[in-house]
Length: 363
Image (cartoon, rainbow, N blue to C red; front, side, top):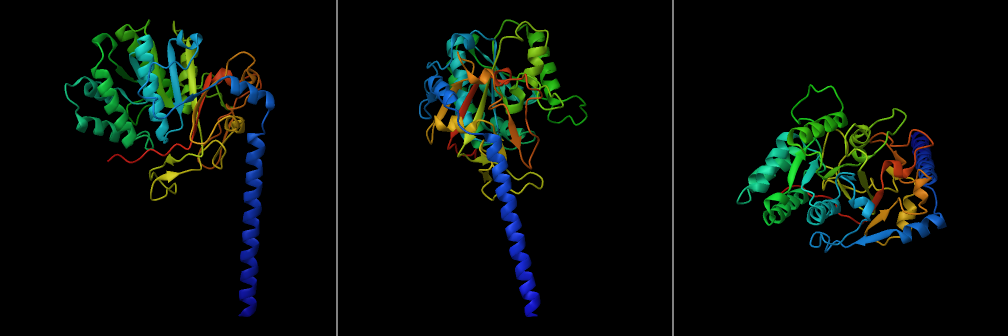
């Protein structure tokens, strides 16, 4: 019996040793992929960053964060990894800022036409129909479980108040470009549907000369094909389309460090009881972003920082840092599909959020 116990003990210790070695190798591979810190890149980032204050971002839409080239564009897209609370504040800032300064009144959303119509009904009612808004937020869980949250609800409550004070010519209208949530027979991709739905709305309503702002998941705002399959997102398809505004497109993507994501229970993926998980930040272990250490080097804990990646002397015009993302266990990598693709081919601005809390369950 003692020999059996001793054997089992050695077997267990051997298993633990192998597990630790595997974890160490996994960590080393992640660090190699992320890369180190380049002094010239750090100098560029220091010259081309702007801090965004959490306490004032929603209250001061007059503060301009971008250059004249940005504002001269016609389509502005913000991309996120769903589940982080601070991005809801950034989204609210963006639509209010563009609306106030440049008359942007059309908000492209990763929802279908039915839910967009419901949001527009909510925005235009004389009093807040909170039951209607809560139903829209709950419905979003069908397609994007992490996004269906109290913070999403609160954002639209705030935008109702903002919208209510606008003249009719500036009131915000939501355009839902996603596939029908209830349609299980569609054979084309979501990104193809988004382009088709957007083009149809523009043509039917005669919006060819309007400016548009949109809020989407990260991959949908990438402006060129990625991975070996040459996947084209909504933004990439839009840029290639024969449309008057296709070349006037700006994409901003959000990265996180030291932050928690909301991960409600879906399928068999293990989820903590509080539905919060920290493993999806840009420095791993589940997601690793090449070059994320350089953004971390020039920012402080608890900050939100915007980086212009296309300025004079930008290293991102000649590298694949930030646009190269390795995903472990929970999805596919998102990588350039050839050496000629550079970061600014995918997006022009990046926002780093540090210490964001997770979105919370709708009350």
